[in-house]
Image 1 (cartoon, rainbow, N blue to C red):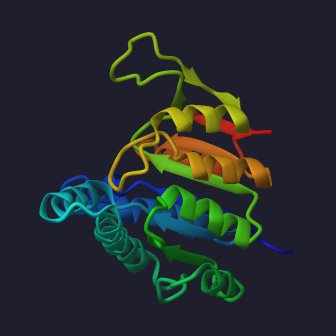
Image 2 (image 1 turned 90 degrees about the vertical axis):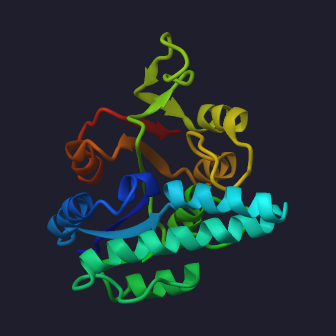
Length: 230
């Protein structure tokens, strides 16, 4: 039986909140290892705080958004290597340099791990583009936020978490928050949201701190985050 491919975008701040969270990385690796008999995983890691630090420093030295993006991308690759180290016995031994390489690697491996790729695109977009390339029907966005809210819950106490929403509603919300600058935080970037929509890929938005939600999202059980679909 052909294994279903699940694509994940894992926030860098979960992997490296200050210094690398080795315990957390080992815990999520254990979950991927456990379910690799049934699923294949395509994992994209974000840059987190380091990406923001380097992008901000680049702008202070020489105001160029392309170079700021490149500096942030390097942080995503550092984080990808941490996850690769935890899964090296069952994953592709390298970080793919292209979507085609990732697709080919998945033919012979249960797990493939990538960082960022093209300046001007976030790791959210990389994850969805990868999902499209490898015919993955589900993208799990793993971050510090436990779902998608009507407003910023840190600023508005009346903000409500949405358990289910449509692709077009996600794209509209993302468009309001997406500044297109490296290192900026927003729910999910607008390009990634539109790519989800065009291919009908199901999106799951969960808190990476709740490992039960991560596991439930993988095995198609109800979780406490947000599901985005047609």
